Image (tube, rainbow, N blue to C red; front, side, top):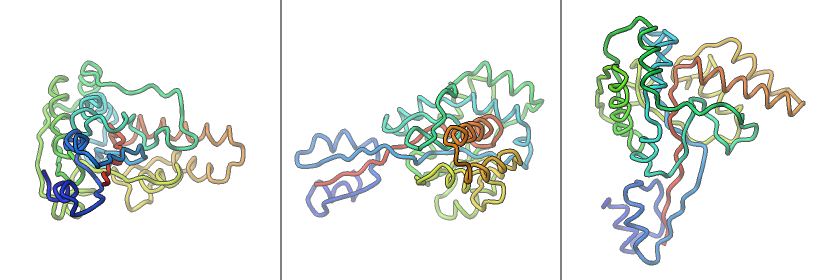
Amino acid sequence: MSARTAALASGQVHFINALNPNTVQMLERMKKLNIINTAGRSHYTMPMLVDQAPFDNADLRLALKYAIDRQAILKQVLGGYGTLGNDFPVNAAYDYFPEGIPQRAFDPDKAAFHFKKSGYDGVIPIFAADVMQGGVDMAAIFQDGAKKAGIKVELNRMPTDGYWKNVWRNKPFCVSYFGTRPTQDLIYSIEFFSKAASNESKFNNPKFDSLLIAARAERDEAKRKEMYADMANIVRDESGSIIPVFNNYLNAAA
C-alpha cells in the first residue's frame, strides 16, 4: 500500500488522485471511502520518430500497430478503467468524434505481413519508464505481442528522472502519454501539427496540416466533422504514434 493510500485509509487525508488501478478493489472494500472513476480524454502513446530509420517506413509502422494487444493493456495496465485507442488521439468524449472507423485489433498475421513488406528484419528497440502508471508494463505487453508476429523487440528500461529530456523525442521509439484537452483542434495541434514542439513522433503531413487549419474556420458542421474524420484516418494509418488506450481518471475520497 502506498503512503498516500495509507494516509487516506487512516483518515490523515481526505482525498487522493491518480490511484493505481491495482489498489482500487482493495479501497472499495473499505467503508467510508468513495472511488471516483471518471472517463476522460487522456491517452497513452508509443511514438516512433518518423524521420529516423527504421520508423520512416510506413509498413514497419503499420506492423507495430497491428502487433500490440490493446485489450491486454486495457485489462492488465489500466485494470479495465479506460477504453481502447485506435491510433488517433480522439475518443467519444470529444465533439465531432469520427464514428465508423474500424477498431484496429491485435493481428499477428497482419503485423508479420507488413513487417516482411517493410524489408527490415532487425530488432526493434523501445525505451520505457513508469512516467505514467504502467509505462514499462505496457512496453512489455507490446514486446510479447510482437514476438507472436515474429518481431523481436528489445525493451530498454529507463529511469524516470530525466526521461522527458533524454528519451522523449530523442530515442526513436518510447512510451508517453497526453492529458485531456478540451477540443479536437487543440489535441491535434499539440500532438500532430508539424510545427508543434510537442509533436512527439515528428509527424509531418501537409494534407493533415491544411485540414487542421481549415477546420478551425469551417462553419458547416457536417463538413467540419468530415474534415476531422479525414484527420483521424491520416493519423491512424500514416503517423508514427501507436495509441493503444484512453485511461480513466481514478481518485478516492473519504
